[in-house]
Length: 64
Image 1 (cartoon, helix red, strand yellow):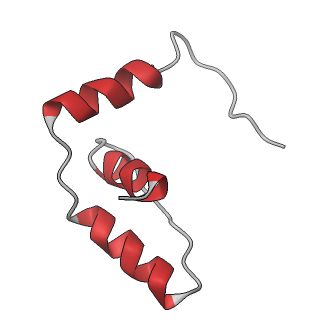
Image 2 (image 1 turned 120 degrees about the horizontal axis):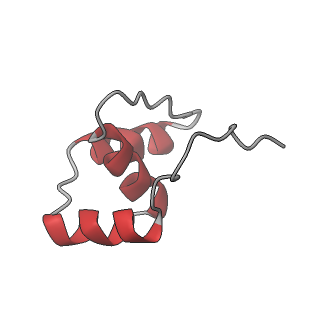
Image 3 (image 1 turned 90 degrees about the vertical axis):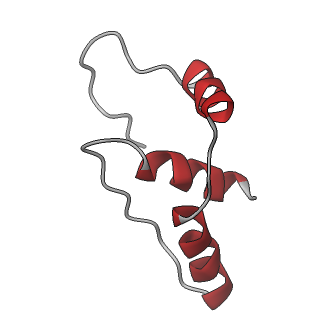
């Protein structure tokens, strides 16, 4: 799995979150579709959550 697939698979499992992935090339579209069916086990989800904890308080979105 690519990092983008793992990230998309994680986002798709979050309540009240909508993913809007970009796909121009057919191969990229297939990768995005595969992410929807990608199983992430409890250990993988815990590792992702530990690496990217939610903020402790409300904060503005980072923009650049």
